[in-house]
Image 1 (cartoon, one colour):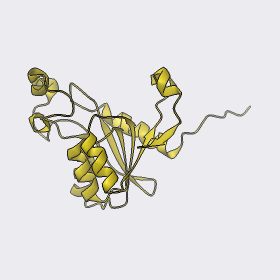
Image 2 (cartoon, rainbow, N blue to C red):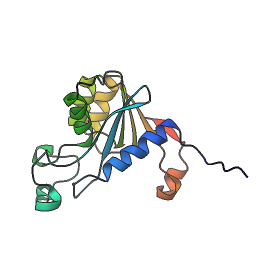
Image 3 (spheres, one colour):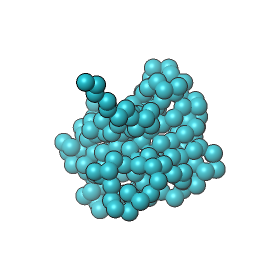
Image 4 (spheres, rainbow, N blue to C red):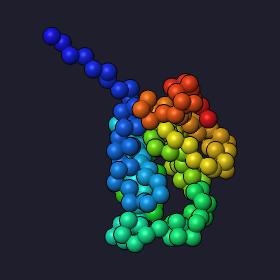
Length: 170
């Protein structure tokens, strides 16, 4: 008797790792994970949370929530370092070049992360969820950074999403 399972594609595999990284998030609003990959090798991971050694929002509360600041606005009032930023910093701390790499993120990068991604030389972003940041999308287009949206697993999809193709370019 042989057992056959469906092996995930490389994109599904790395996105699953980004999702696992997001479980370490200490943000009260959104849990995000990121993985930087080059030649099918993981270079760095990150999740959103307070800088090293500082109190987490889980412990002291969220200022943005208290002030009623909508998602995608007033990033300077957030304690957290974003998942993509943490992955880029982790690679830098260990002297790893991430030029021409791919970043997998559970959500579309904000404008702050977008600028770092462009300057780090990351050539492709693979995401699962959108984020309300038109400036980010425009900058990525101008910089010719490819963005692919990976379809969510069937159990987490809305009916509308189920009708979409597995991957689409933004």
